[in-house]
Length: 180
Image 1 (tube, rainbow, N blue to C red):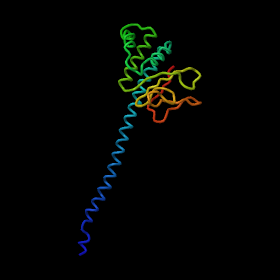
Image 2: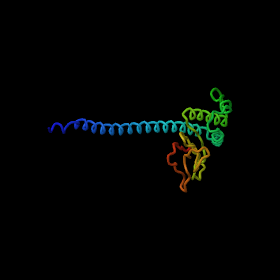
Image 3: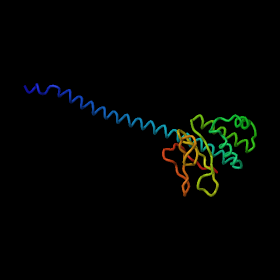
Image 4: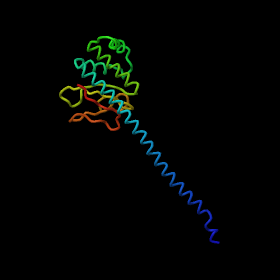
């Protein structure tokens, strides 16, 4: 008779074991998802740093036109590929360009690179600095390349000004690089 009371216990043990296995698998899936997100974030940061570093190096070479770089980035229409920039700077591939033409050309090239990566560019005077240095902002996702507390697009701003300079906004996806 004792065997009769033991019926189904093995099945119950299997169900408990499957429940524990399912919890373990769900934890592993969560870790994998987070790893993929971290890899994507790292890739975006590397791409943004490459774009900003490339533009900063071009600005250092053509420092006499730094205000033109800032003007062109401000007039970049949220990084739509501007045909005027492409036309006026196209001769820089084959011939001599003035510093202003080179700035227009460089901004166009950086904008094309950023747009193809799903990023936006901007250059503003670095917040909290007395020396007038410029900062190149590269943002992606739901972040705008600006230094304010709110943007008009419904996205979050990359940075916020503080008394000692600026800091990144929480959950912003952007980088800032100083150019001089």
